Length: 550
Image (cartoon, rainbow, N blue to C red; front, side):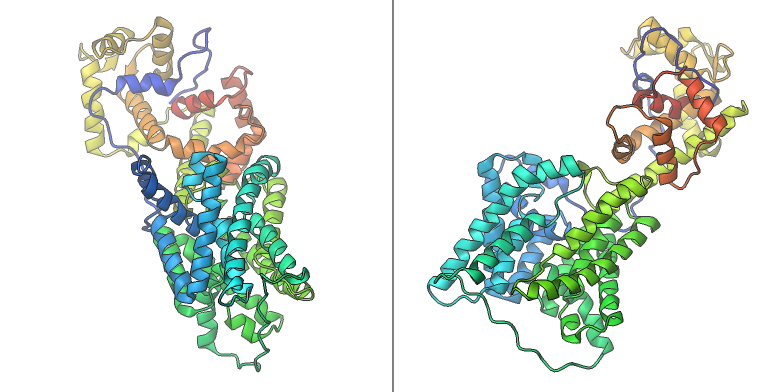
């Protein structure tokens, strides 16, 4: 394509990609899409739409999603398997966890929270954890003890939802990070402190486990500590429960499960290097914070790539060390550290990466789905931005460059030729303004004179007054590739516009380049982009037009 300017008409034109869409009234080449890294059930978002008008089924759907969201899994099938794993661990753990997630979800309904995060389980996971934790650290007996802890689970699970609604939203907007498990940690520690330190007849804490003899270091037990560490995210210590929870994660996100296991392995390594008690290691207590940290940074809140997984691994190792230190400190006053080590390390990394490594682009919080989908967006952005760099370099040397057209198959070129010939009514081998206007009128998609002039000028890359087949084919292929992946590309790019001004500055463009492994723009490239916009701000629509015509 050629060296195009965005001042073809005096008024702001209709976005170019919308104008091109009006041309494509015949069969067109298939879109360019990327295959996901691994097969996955994903987040089943279509189910949310189908159940929207079925209140009971809908409530069950987002309750199960809330269970899975404890470990960043937004999938009701996974949530059901995790709930089964809790009941296999113990009926008391399962009942208290279920009471917690139901209480927190119902409280969210009563508070009238936004429906989208509610039905994706965002208001359920802290409640599930609160109920499971109170089940783990309580000493219920038949009668008042059982009911006392059950009422406490319902109350403090509901409290996590209140914190999420009134503090979590503020936190996300102010700090630009998710609140993670902080509501669960705060509410549960308050409840356990009251039970432990205030004399009352209803809530009795369980007695501390007696210290077992130091076991020998065994390879098999080290291996089983990995899935048990995953289970300990839900306070489940049985191997079968941990294995079932790992399966539940794998159903939704195999990549997330692999990254979590990497984190769990680093937690085990941290324990071995510091000479910790092997009983705690085999029980998975050195794994769960590391599992959560690795998944959070290595795929959930950042697209999974070598950098994010590497940084997530470092965070996982540190969270395990912090977990050991905090467990000793909190143990002095009779309280557990819960997932506080994960929260503190992950949030510190989130805020540190925002300042020190902006090229590691976070996932927009409203767009968090699964690591596979985040990887998909990253691959789309990498392809589009890297090709844009090639186009800019070619345009600087004023070369005609038709990368997509030259690499297209014979079948795709045949489809393009069919569209081209339907517009080229005089069969001259090139398109005129009149032919383009007539084609759009016949399709009931007529354009204003300004829009038609703008469209034609953008398509005529060599400025010779006509559009040849190569010019036409290249632009159509760029359009199809961009529009097929438009949502992924926009979603990936949103956090790069850090000040939300809908303008892409040169520093932000360099962040985009660095995020996909491209070097910063050279002085000549920066000057070229400024020239293309005539010094006007590079808005999103102008950037899209550059992707199409440069």
